[in-house]
Amino acid sequence: MLSQYSYFQAGEMKATALWTYKERADDEIGFWKGDKIQVDRIAPGWWTGSTDGTAKSGFFPGNYVKLDDRPISRFDLDSTEKTDAKELPHSEVMLIQPLAHRQRRFYKRKQDGLNYKDTSYPRVMLLVVGPDGRAELKKEGKLRELSGEIELRGGHGVWKVYATCMEGRGLHLWIHVVLSTLMCQLLEL
Image 1: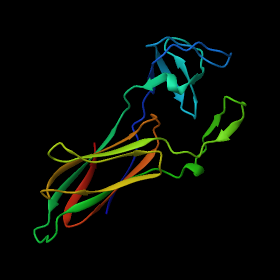
Image 2: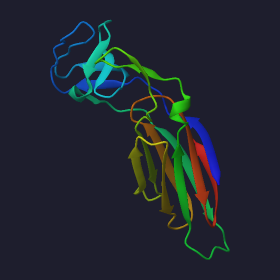
Image 3: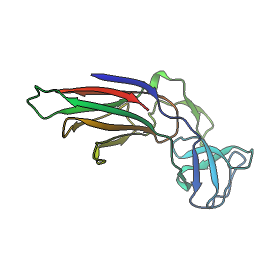
C-alpha cells in the first residue's frame, strides 16, 4: 500500500451570478447577473461572501450563482509490472478526508442567527486518468472516503490521480493506493 498525505489546493472561491438578486435584509448582499462574487462560506441554502469591488459581506442564495474553476491537487502513480505476475494488475485508489466532527467549524444559520457546528464533509472529487488519457475512475461526493478499483491495463505507465475540493477549502487529504502485482511509486506534483 502507498500513502500520500497532503492538502487540497486552496485558493479563492469565486462564483459568477446566474441571475440578479436584490438584497432583502441588511445582512444580505445584492448583485447583477454576471457579477463576480468572492465566496467566503458555503452553507445549506444561504452562502456568505461579497461582490467583487465592495467591502460589504453578507448572505446570498447559493442557487443564484455558479462556482468558477477550483484548484486541483495532482499525484502521479508510476508503475512497473513485476516480471513474475500471473494476474491482470489492478489497484484500489482511495481519497480520505479527516473526521468532520473533530474539526472546529461553525456556521451561522440565516433563519435564526444561531451558530451550528458543521459536521458535514465538503464535496470532493477523485479522478484517475490512465497513461492513454482515458478516465479510469471518477468519484464525487460529500463523503469522508471516495474509492474505486481500476484495472492497470498494460501494467506500466503513469496514472494521474487528481483530487479537488469543490468548495475551495484547503483541508487535509490522504491518497491511499492498494496494489497487486506491481511495483509503484506515488509522487505529488
